[in-house]
Length: 395
Image (cartoon, rainbow, N blue to C red):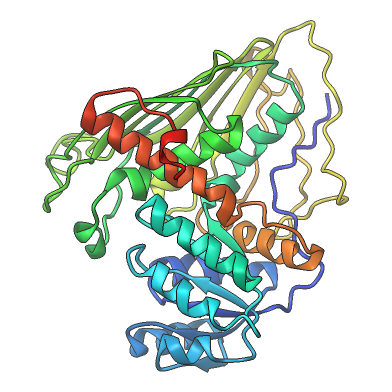
């Protein structure tokens, strides 16, 4: 069986959209701008609350203009697309200011979470819609290569009807200093990746059960450190994640056992994978293995209507495998790309493609409102010890 998995981003035909970057921290310096350079995108300006940091990043990545303030970058009429990478509690204000510059800003790629509440996220979406600005959200786990490859497998029906999906995270995030002032820690900063991925794979769930506790190692006060949650679908599907951000006591002297694994079972097959992110800065590709029933007729996997895909690193997009290529009938495609930084080309690319084609971005602000509402549902389900629904938070 010769398979081609649609796991790479579709890149825009026009790569010279002029991008203005807000923020000069790790995620912009080491992820966004590295991926944009590999993809051939065109960042033309940068600003951050620390002008010295912005100047250093501009020099590192060859960005021609460094504005002393964010306001001056927003007023720069050469900027067509705004790329925001700032803490979530200050992002909505930047989006409000950008909406007033709709005469030249055509699109915004906002960081996840879009906002720290559904109400404020909805305000951002509505402001951009009124201004005619395409708003996309950087839910970058959707562009992790194993996550995207599984989506392709699910869409082609190779696993049959999904029955159970799980994500198990035993990894220790680096909580940034701004995290300590937020009303939610893990749910809106880490679990949001897995909640949005479940939405990407299966759609928005019908009911939510959750339990949470503080991480005993995290130094600042918080309520939702370690998260356990179950998502129920009326179809019968169940999805669940264990987001263990302590994984301890790995940093207190014990041996470590750090990983992120996922698994999806269906009526016709099974898929499992690993996420390579926990080993960063070592660049470890995520993995995917899958197996299907012997009497399942495999369909040829192609790269999609847009024609053959190419990797942002220039490697072939074709992923080949056969039942004999893995142990005991497992099909085991592999690729050279990694989530950090390669996935960040995809989140920008889907916005640029939307601008080219005059449509909503794939990860639009409007769609992302249901991810924000799902985060709200998890927090309330855990705090109030009850079953919640996403609908009750879609105000």
